[in-house]
Image (tube, rainbow, N blue to C red; front, side):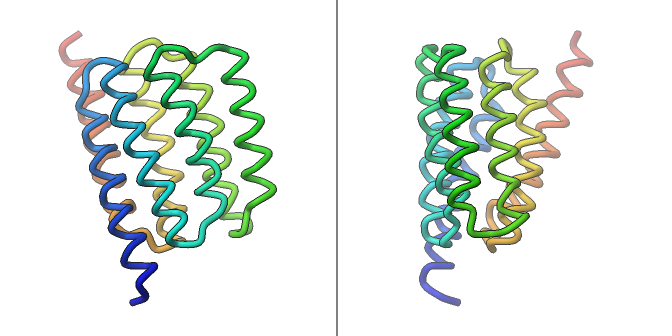
Length: 167
């Protein structure tokens, strides 16, 4: 196993732990705080595993998450970040068709983060996001993220069911 694969998987584990923390948070601010950590480690994961599409889309997502965390994400900024993410993601895609998954996922999630006003709706967006990233991470061999994101998808689905049982 190469050093870059080991390093990429260590960063992948850290990113996954941050995502895990985000799904148990009740406020959008707390949720976004942990998503900032997730994207920081995801950038490092993708860099270590030579995945330029994932690194690019995560870099733009980091900016988006910071603005969302500070409650400063506007329609104009969301649109600009969306265009930058898709444009750079397509331009720097070095993984072929599978490289389109992070671009699509990031674009959809960016829109959801802006239009969503509660954590329950963010959980739905997170399930879609985690699924697409799981497939991508399987392809680039970021195994902790694949395992963790699968578990988090199940956990998030359980949280959705629990929420509706209370209502």
